[in-house]
Amino acid sequence: MSLHYPRVLRIHSAGPTTPGITATAGQPPVPARHRDHGIVVNAEQRTITSGGRPLALTFMEFELLAHLVAHPLRVYSRHQLLATVWSQEAIVSVRTVDVHVARLRRKLGPDRRDLISTVRQIGYRFAPRNAPPATTR
Image (cartoon, rainbow, N blue to C red; front, top):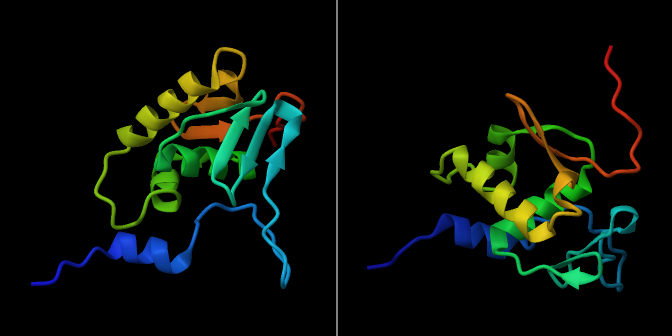
């Protein structure tokens, strides 16, 4: 009897799913660094530091925060985050996103928890403090 785990196979065959990594032939990937708001994402080493201190993140917390940091100011619905960060096959509730965001905010600490902002009735976005204000048309 053989067990088949498509999510595990896809992760191992595709490599890291974290965006923001660039590489050239013969050189290691360049980690995505976002210093303007005190968060440094190193996708190669799978570490994130906030204000110089490393964050102890679970696999999915790392994936979610790295994804949001790589796309600042972009608003993602909970369903979009489930499809992008979690797999399409994952059977989870949209509340899973809320729980992970709450954990990330707690781990970021009181001085940086507001970097992940809630967009009412839509979802979440990563909003660096020095970003220009959003405009509406």
